[in-house]
Image (cartoon, rainbow, N blue to C red; front, side, top):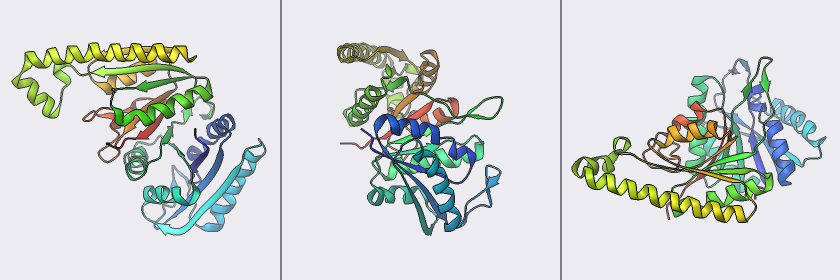
Length: 303
């Protein structure tokens, strides 16, 4: 299970909103936390309307202040300031894996649309594409006063498609769920004739009847597979629900996350062509913008 969590911070209150969640997670997992700030080659003067840290001394003082608060809770905290100016933040975060030896990166998805596009579409996606480490994306939860930092992970939505390339992520997710005593909602989405894309859509146009039969059989297989998995997990002490839907995977991931009150969505991604959920060709880059639920991304590498 995760034993060393890396938290990139830029000095903004939005970035800091992950700290209470990371602290609670580290406490439960007995994990170490490293707070990191990377000096950018051409840093903006402000981030999210707030002052942006741009020099080593300021960064060291800032990280140490955050670390001191966490140490009061008995957590093992380290800080690191990367002083060589970089232009590629994602690559720098991945490169630090060898130096810092972390096994999870936690990032905040910022609320402003422009930054969100940059942050999710570039940094988090590239981190997944470049490395072999999972990334936990947290949304700051706004209330009437400001940012509500509280969050629990009591139920996971686990997206499954039966692909062996994704089994590492599934195994890690189950380990995390056990540590957090979280329930599980298993989800598989089988395309319909109208939602097929790419080569499958072309085949469907040429062989519509055969394609429909194939999709119906795929649904039956998926349901049988999930039922078997759910039965096995229940014998191991997990609380499990499941759904097999037909249609667009992204839409059903979003719907089920709300309908089943899930507070963590687990997805696999190849990273290089977008956040692909577990389905090649899906429009999963939409997911972070459609939910306020935390998202745990596991890198998928084809065997």
